[in-house]
Length: 309
Image (tube, rainbow, N blue to C red; front, side, top):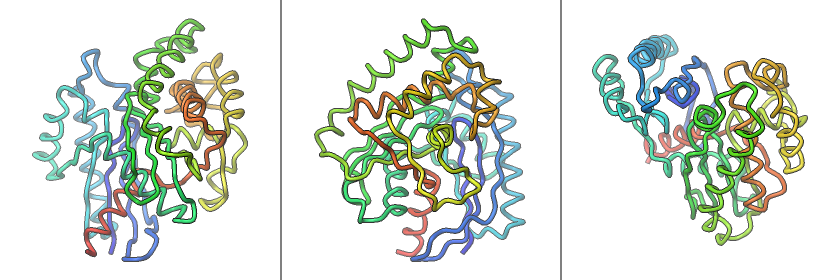
């Protein structure tokens, strides 16, 4: 069967079409996306503007046309923290339903962590033992750990790279004072929540997912995306210390010239690096293996499980 999933994230809106069959790996068939930058375009009150909502509705109409052209038999859509937490998020979701017919599922933070964990487990398999998963999005940070496909611990923290940039780093490049304050804020927030992960047991494999993690690994020397998903890629604590020191003084234009960094995400890169560094320090992890699958793939796998059960 051919599945389509519309992912309304904090940075991009992405339609992914996959060929999927029970017991087989979902194979990407077509991709259509736009950089809506939802987490950066919210008003001071956190509301989605009418202009941004207009762009969202228009792009979902595009996605529906693409899905029809690609022969999609089952299409579903979900939204993450930026829309979930906005004061008018429900109104935007209702507008999408009324104008496009698409029913958006607003995932909870714990659901994001759980579905990302499922994707990582399926990618690396049972031989990886106890997994620890670190996923940095635009609006939130998801952490999960466990031995099974359902994690024992699943946490979501308001430490997304886009959110932190918008709320704490107004200058480009950021001032030293703002960078110090953000570093302290990230580590204090993390320290208050990591105990369940530390007491769950040491991981046999620690994994990083998301575009931010992939970009950081690429800066550290990991293979480019063109080399394919099966090339091992890693990111270490030492890598992150060097990246934080290198990236902090740069403005967004300079960061966009770094390997693996897109222009649209360049400004968020420093906040993402601070979160990744803090996570590895406080979780006492030396290295992350980078997983090409994340939330979107987890939801596809869950959908397949339900369709074939």
